[in-house]
Length: 268
Image (cartoon, rainbow, N blue to C red; front, side):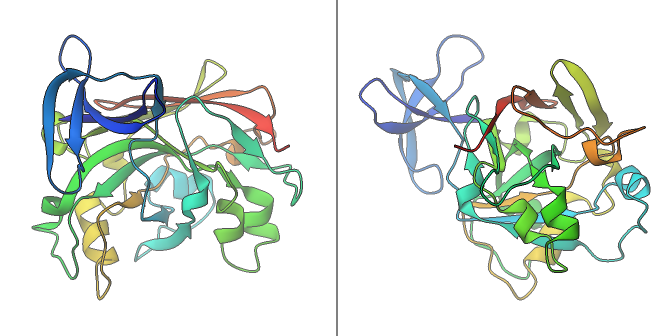
């Protein structure tokens, strides 16, 4: 199944199910509970992020080559941080560079986002994927100055700004892809490919991350897990870092899921 979330011409927000051909079909109900795919075409006026997360958990330094480009040792256990639900942004809407709590070092990160569909706690790697509703594209936008230099020793301040977690364009169930750790993943900045790798380079695969994150901790439906970014981030660009600026366009692309595009503006 390929789910979308959208607003219609009357301003109502609904889910839809994309079809192999023809328009998406409207879904009645909640994709995290009981729902029915109707025969009515979805009246898609605006495409939205495929869900409103209940929480967003991020995993840092989870690609071998990204750890190397960052000059850091590969972690022995997953590195966890959080983003607020205020960071959510829709496909096509703007990533805003902070101007009040200003940042001059805003960076892109293409990430595979895993969405938990059923509450789980203390799951094993063997059954972890049973709790996954689907996968989507994410851009874990990061203000590196606030993350590294001015964050007080933790990453959240640099990850927590409004619009810093675009998600979309659709939520794809696991049966639609070869496997969460068998997917090509890329970032295109103003049409130039700046990240181009595969999720097989994760240090901790998706099932291992769910096992770890659910340890003594309930993952509720709608939990989004950001699984890390491959090498090629702007911070590591040579000879100088390549920070996002107003007017840029960033596209995250993941095999079997699609392309998530956002423009960049200054916070007003």
